[in-house]
Image 1: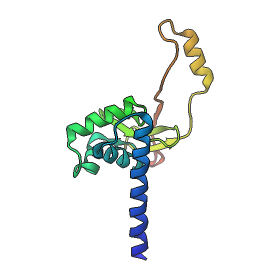
Image 2 (image 1 turned 120 degrees about the horizontal axis):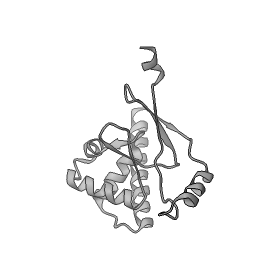
Image 3 (image 1 turned 180 degrees about the horizontal axis):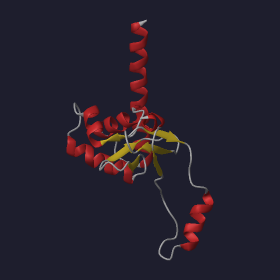
Image 4 (image 1 turned 45 degrees about the vertical axis):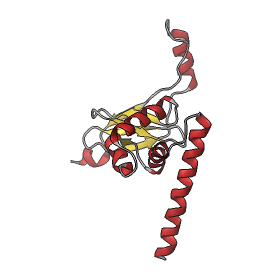
Length: 152
């Protein structure tokens, strides 16, 4: 049973690496070992990662300053999503589907939520703005108190 689980994990790792390489090629970024490592780490993560989290996942293959540069490149290329959870850190996430988060302001617990602004809001923004013709991207994070903290 243990051997089957290890084989499954190895196959999944190889698949994430291949997906990472394909995504980099599609966006025109050069496929490097370092970029593949960083993107694969984000693809494997079940939650948004801070720079120290990313570095911890890839430090055998990528130095910390390179992690910063790669994250900036991946955000600029719109491969990954960058957000802020009001704790003085940036977080990075590969999203296989667009979503946002709700964050507990007491304990920091985060949950993915599949809520987004309706297209009418972007249309209204475009009509209202005097300086912009539209948006390319947005972040939308909600903050509140989780059920566990509310009981305390």
